[in-house]
Length: 178
Image (cartoon, rainbow, N blue to C red):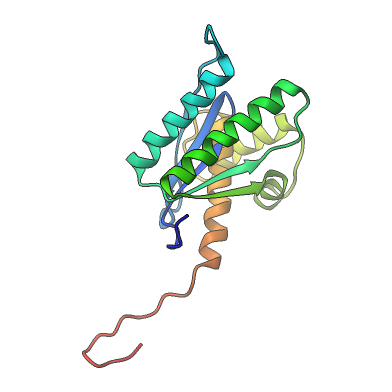
């Protein structure tokens, strides 16, 4: 993994329709998109979805120069199918980050929601809250998936910026120390 300070952050709200938010830490707001992963495949729909996420992520990391990826910690799955999907999709992200030397972070979704919205609630309430929050902050989010990724991006950016070492003034003359 990289030991350099983070510069380009990618936030993912991983699901069949994956919300995406990205930008440099110097950006005030992220750009957003969604990745509509395939639903059906004649042989193995989940395997195909996992492969699609991994390939899309690989291309995106290279294209956008991403050095840090953040995903929300998953809530406990209700079914074995959800559990398999979650492990597979999260594993694809983890594998691609390792392959490319990209820092991977998990953030607890309830903590993010409480700090950004002042509360947590049901999944449907939080989807609406994320869309409204993005609109108030002039973040263009197509749908709740990208809005939730944007909220996570903003929260993580704020955390990373707070923990960044203070900038040192560069010397202005030869022999001057900082």
